[in-house]
Image (cartoon, rainbow, N blue to C red):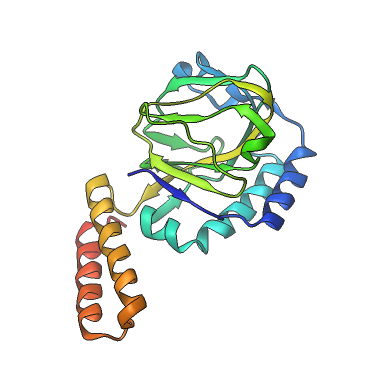
Length: 224
């Protein structure tokens, strides 16, 4: 499942994040790459343990926690602390796959990467090129503050930037529900329940029964 999640950050939060990261020192993006990615990657990145990355990452994590759509779709157990990258003219990230397990350097924090996320921090009109291509689907280029959530198991790439600058946050999610098909089923059921509740109310007897089914399925599928 690939899902665009609008307005994870509002305009004021985007401005706060950009003020923090734009003033920071950036390094070669390959500082956090594995061997395969290093051959494909040409961009800049904030050092993941830098004060700026931590401060901006806290804003992103707070926003994710209040995004009902993100929680419903990802059923997050752990979120890797957000990272930040930028692509100038001619920079790109060729086709690659994300590591199955991501370990935060200098700590015992590690996650299984079930889902990948890109949170856009520059509007599409600010740069040309730079589309995210996932499994050969049409390129993705969302407004600042919007996020794309997609399976970490997919092959994906960032097209070369031809003008302006592409700025984004990226991170990975370990879901409580390991299997993508189970997550998709639960998300569809949850979405249907919420849509019905708009018309019939959450106290409606049938809505309550369906909600019970949802939570019993989640109990069966969740690994915590």
